[in-house]
Length: 121
Image (cartoon, rainbow, N blue to C red):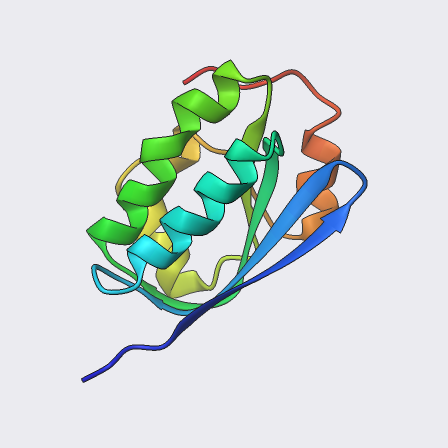
């Protein structure tokens, strides 16, 4: 069974918003990884993952978030996560992602987080 996953990019000033849609699993994680790598390589390190349409995340998908966070923060940026569905939010919380990432309700809240002090990894 093929799984569907897309990432739509938009910007708000120097912040890139990545709207995730569908199933983020071992088959689709490389696509998400490629998008984040392209943003990072272009010097865009203030990122928001908008997850309102993300219906499923596996350990492979979670690994993409973890694989970039240290480099993004070392470059002076951060990756904020917003608009998680209850099912996906539960996975993030069980694994302690809320102690590593700012997880907030909306894109506007995530943008506001960039005005505050940076989180440590």
